[in-house]
Amino acid sequence: MKELSPLEIDALTEIINIGVGRAANSLNDIIGTHIQLKVPRIELYPLEKLNELLGRLGHANVTTVMQSFKGEFTGSAALLFPPESTRRLISSLTGESVHNVAAIADEGRSALMEIGNIVINCILGTMGNILECSMDFSLPQFRTIKNPVDLLAGSGLNEQGAGFIILAEANFYIKSLEVTGYIFIFFKIDTFEILTRMINRAVAR
Image (cartoon, rainbow, N blue to C red; front, top):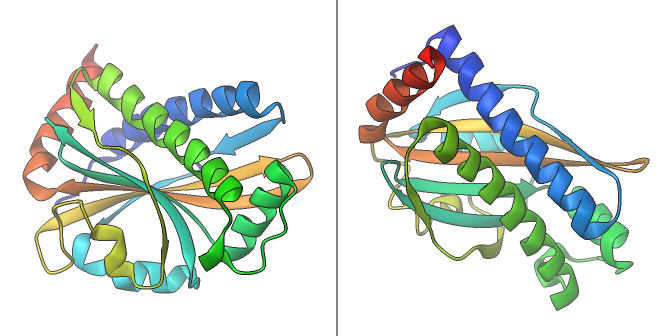
């Protein structure tokens, strides 16, 4: 698998951290509750490792907000919450008690959609601005997934194809309640060279 250099990893981590910081500020303003988001590390995986990767996370019935994008980069981005984090987050934001994450009420779905939309757009928007590239976004979609392959729906990718995953693990903190989410960004393999070139151009500036 192609790899990013340590300098490129550091630069991409910083770009995503900036996007996550902007998302945290936006969420604090909109929701009115102090929220901290941190991205401690960035990891790359070949696309065929998707099942294995999600298996290591150890969660079923994961709720996710997804958006596809195209332009100089083509792929999709997803914000995922494990079941317990979903229940805690919805309860914290809406007061709604969630017993079955596969049957979340409209208010809870709307709250998660808003959070996912803000986080994904802040991260991808920051990438676009710093790397000086254009991306068009689809409308966000809310799903509860049981099979890792479901993550790829609408992305133009499949687990048997050529591609790679940039995984940023995001930790969400709301007051004293710890909620953990995961940010996935999927890229088509033919954009890898474009990504590295733009990262190095941004570093040089």
